[in-house]
Length: 118
Image (cartoon, rainbow, N blue to C red; front, side, top):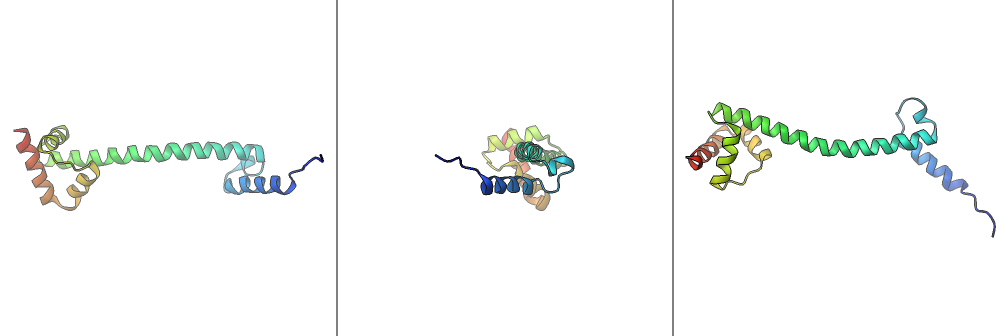
C-alpha cells in the first residue's frame, strides 16, 4: 500500500489555524506550533469570559437594586426577602430595569415587599 501524504489537507489546516490567529503579535502569528497553542488558549479564555460576563451583569443588577432600595429606605436583602414572601417572581435583571425606567412601578413593588415583611 502506498504512503499517503497530506499535502493539500495539511496546508489547508495550517492556513485555517494561521487565519484564526490573524492580528496576534510576534511569532504566534507566523509559527504553526505557537499559533495552535495561542488559539487553544484564546478559546479557553473566551469561554471563561462568557461565564464571567454573566457574573458581572448579575452584580451590576444587584448594585442598581441596592441603590434603588436605599433611596426608598430599605435594604436590598430585606427587599428580596419581602419579594419572596409576597410571591413576586421577578428576576434581578427585570427589577433593575423597572427601577431605572419606571420609578412609580418600582415604588409599588417596594411597598408590596414592605407589606409582606410586616
